Image (cartoon, rainbow over all chains, first blue to last red; front, side, top):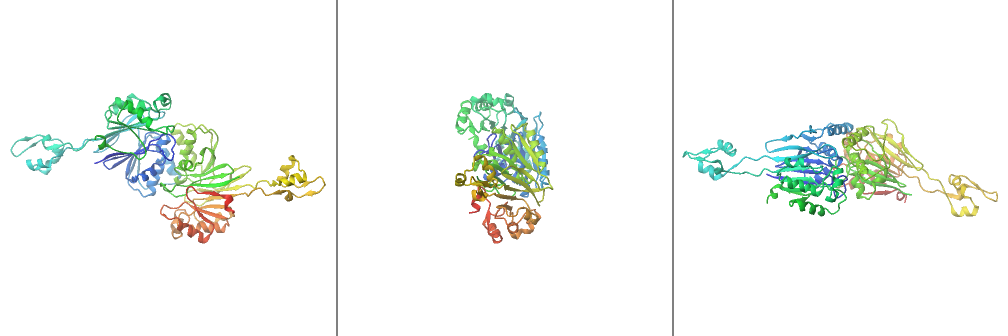
Length: 308
Length: 308
């Protein structure tokens, strides 16, 4: 069981050789979710030896180029390299016409099914759900419509302690009920309480991806206590005016949101090109929220290590 | 005066860390022409320290992604970095709607004028012309409509030999006429023939860019005797069948076109990912056309050195 986030790019606006536009890969128990897809994302995936054919779901926050210009290239490469399994894209409606027009211009009929799931502009909904995870959008406040995404792993069933199975002679067909919390009546007639036979199986991890956005207190209750919040910090705190005018946040604002929502850890990113030394941004954020980390291309966050 | 071609990428289909999709920059006497613009082209331009704001004209051969997926990113970066001078794009009509839709989705009104010049599908025309250069399209034979481009520098005026100016007391206001070929009547009444007073100023360079295309003899007369032909050689000669089926050429076919059109030099590119060692492709082409070179990212071809 793993819950790992790899940063493929975390810069704003203009890509350079060293700093790449926004893209992240979340590996939630071998389900691979791509979040945003700036230009060059397919090359970053290769660089970090992440097989892009394992990605089945792609979430695009908004239609500024630094968050999606690499998508059509990735879709095309998946096709050229023989993909045949489904791909699901979750994005604002306008993206569909852009993809369709580009496939039409190249006379390409994809050899795999592509499902487009429009994100409602005004609603916050579950976009994807299965037995292990639930993924929802949150409305962000940017210069164009923009979504954050919240990934919540479901609490897995409890694990039965091996010795208890032998001790109380629990038959196989009762395992599931006990894993789900049932008590057990032993041959002796004694009622064995569930928590005497079982232990918690693993933690249910949670991750909130929030970029691009101005400082928005509306976000606080929605991302309450997540394990990790990725929040943009395009500017240092002295540029709060510029941040607001361009639909972005400062280090101080990102840290304040983290603090008020009592998240466990904060990862800041989407840095302006103007900053050569990002340590200064980290220092500013840590002054308000201690558990802050700096995103950079290639960073891997293992959620289990966040607790240790 | 310089006439220099920089290869930014010369691979087919899928970009990787080391091999980039098609893009080239032609510097014709400090006029910068970008030819094709695969994903990541703006980053390559930065890598080679070529200021992309100096590019005023972009030529796109066709709408397969490996030839244009980097264009919208470049257009956007030009905008974000404060460009205000005109940009001209020459491409098939369908590209305009793709660009417009992406600018609309991001609510971007470019702060510079963007002029779109559709390339006629069935006509070969002069696309751009000024006093120094003329640029035309040629129709290639690929799986979708596709254009090659021919760059022909104009013969510059002749240069007057300094000593002759003194010897024959040629006044300044006669310089232009003599540079254009006029004779001169000296004070003595003697007629001085133009070629006694002037020399050729510089060579008129020519370049033909031909990718993607099957082997096509229709091309031969159109690219006759150019200084440099860039012709795709996606496959080695043993894959002639696959080349034809996918709208591409082999090494042998590229070299045969070069030979039959009596070009001075051949640069092969658009290599399939399957080839790790490109030297074998070079050897195959050189067997038919000796003056063959291998394109690779970062290669700079100085046309004046081609003659030496």
